[in-house]
Structures are given as C-alpha cells and as structure tokens.
Length: 331
Image 1 (cartoon, rainbow, N blue to C red):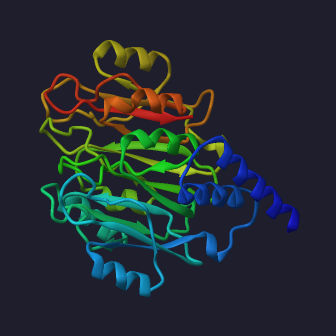
Image 2 (cartoon, one colour; image 1 turned 90 degrees about the horizontal axis):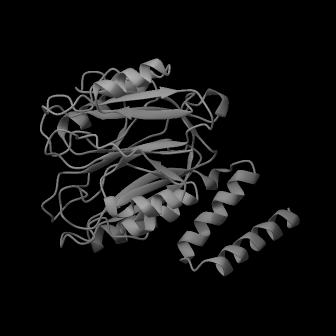
C-alpha cells in the first residue's frame, strides 16, 4: 500500500510541474490513475447527482453531504447561478443523459432513468434542459468515477486528451451564453461497439433499455425536419469495438462506402430538411473507437484534433440552412 501511495504522489507532482492546473483537475487526474491501478471501492463511484439554482439550495445540498463541482452551468447567460453536485456511494451511476423537449424526456422516464427536476437554463432564454441518470448493471454499463464541467470551449481539448467522455448537449443550449459541457470519467476504458440513429421517438425506451447512449444533440439542428439522434453502446472489450466510422453526403460517397464493405446506418441524418441524404457508415478495422459525438463550434476543431480527436470534415446539415455540425471520433 505504501508503494502505491508513493507512486500516486509522484504522478501528482509530475502533473503539477508539467502543466498548471486547478486543484480539482489534479484531484481528478489522481483519482483516474488510482482507479486504473486498484479495485474500485465504494468511495470511487459517483452514485448521485443534483443541481442547485440558488444559494439556499446550495446550503441544503451541502448539509446532505453533496460535493460541488466547479463551473456555473448558466455561464454567460445572465440567468441563475446554477451548480452541479455529486455524492459517492456503492451503487454507481453508469449513464447520464440530457433532455431538451418532452419527447426526449418520455423515453428516459419510461426506461427508468432518474430525473433531476431543475431547469439548467433557469433565468435564461434557452431550452428547458434537464439532466437524467441511470444506475444500470448490464453488459453495456461501466461505472462513472468522476464528473467535471467545462464553461469555456477552449478547455475541451485537455479533457479529451485525458480520456474524459463528453456529454453531447450544450447545457446553455439556445441561451447564447458560453458553451457548457458535462464530462464523465469511467472506471475502465470503454470503446464504441454499436451505433445506430433514430428520426422519431418511438424506439427510445427500447434503445435505452438495451444499453444505448443517445448523443443528445439533433443532427438537424436549425434545419427543420425531423429530430434525428445518433446512438451508441460501449464495451470494455476492445475486440468487440467498431474500428472506423465515416459519413457520406452524396450518392457517389454512398456507393464508395458500400464498395469498401462498410455497414450503413439506415436513418438519413438530414431527414425532412430538404438537404442532401447523409448517412453513417462503420466497419471493424485498425484501432478501436473510444468515443463519438457532435461538434458545433468550429473554433475548437484544431485544438481537439491536437488532443487526439478525429473530426470528419463533412457537414451533417449539407444542403440546408441548419447549423454546421461535424461528427467526431476518438481512437
């Protein structure tokens, strides 16, 4: 045990000397290192999340033993000062989702997710946003051991570089403030093993119950048409992982990926917009995929790529007037 603690202190000191980082970040990196080299204990799991909308609620959560996370979830909007809180426990949270409309919430509720009934855009003009979490224990559930928040897009590359998983939805969605994202650190390294897409909400409950995670941002954002979402499942076994994902935005590319033996996700990511047909394709080849998501901020693409993120340079809203959205993967 003494030797393990010494290694951890050396690791912490090295991080502190190599890069200037906050105390919370340093603690997170040390926790990640400890988790990767020891069996998990009750104290390493994130078991409960909560949100405070004002100082009175902050005081109540402190008295209940919750720990506060750095970062105002309403940064730059002029709305309430909103904070995220967590507790450690023996039953881990394994999935975190966001809803920004009632249909998204229905699937989560029907699948047994726990809602945090606090609007993350309270006092601002953005969408009604709510966090949900699940404490699953199935094949596609990997415990979460740390949570963090970024309130500046410039800080995202560092998170990617240290293996954090980004929750897709901007927690200031349509509120015109800073780009706010929740980040998760898991007990073990995970890989993408399945991917699909939906252009309606009828199968949401079934997909959640089968262990899928929804990328909580519409691939048709700002373009009208159907709400289209990408979904994926994770595994801790790299042998089961998908190895490559591509996007086709015209008939020639569709044919090209067919000829190269990629498998197609059948849902058009531009469904109902009048734009080009856009499809996801995947295959097993080269390095396993660790993460998939959407980028709406072109200013951070270079930094994210330097952190090991591959951005597919094809706009998912090609042919319509929606937001420029790019798919990213992490290998």
